Image 1 (cartoon, rainbow, N blue to C red):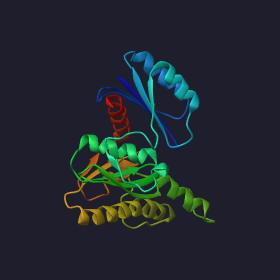
Image 2 (cartoon, one colour):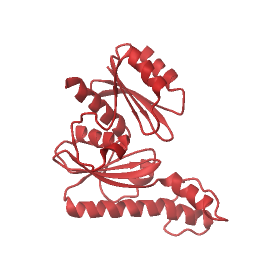
Image 3 (cartoon, rainbow, N blue to C red):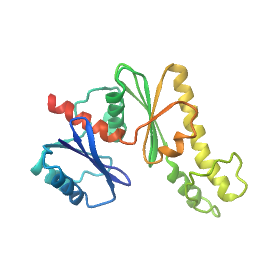
Length: 243
């Protein structure tokens, strides 16, 4: 069994896999050692682990896991089952690359566009040959809501609303919802359309905490995979165990 840990900008996640079968996944804000210790207690068969962080490395967690498992740290030089063609791999977000590996593990030999709707909205292209080309980074939903509030004098801070579907905002709150939620869908749909023209038959894979806001606002057939990042990290761990 394997333990997969990802520490993101706003949340951390831990998942337990039995080979490629996901047994359990948890999302939490803090106390990483406590949560991972509980998972190790429930799954004593765990022998290896991988840690990925888009923030600063948690050396305490890493040392603790290294003492209990065969630890793999995900870094820009970690061997991968796909080809990374990004021009500055040392600056590439680990979450973007891991999500691409996860997509490749689930849908090999297909052109794929991976959309990760989280703190930021990342759109990344992976070819049928397993070549990661890069993509784009844009503000996520919460970042857009906060920016409108913080950089204007009178606009209120509005919370996301999954039930808002109108095309026209009839008051300030609805106008902000319209601009942020509908505008984000229009933006992502435009990117999808541009890629589809270049890669006919393109498969669209969606993940991230705000994926549900986009899933019903996009016209293409979408494969929503909430666990995509963790699947990718587990695949990287298995790939390096075989090396």
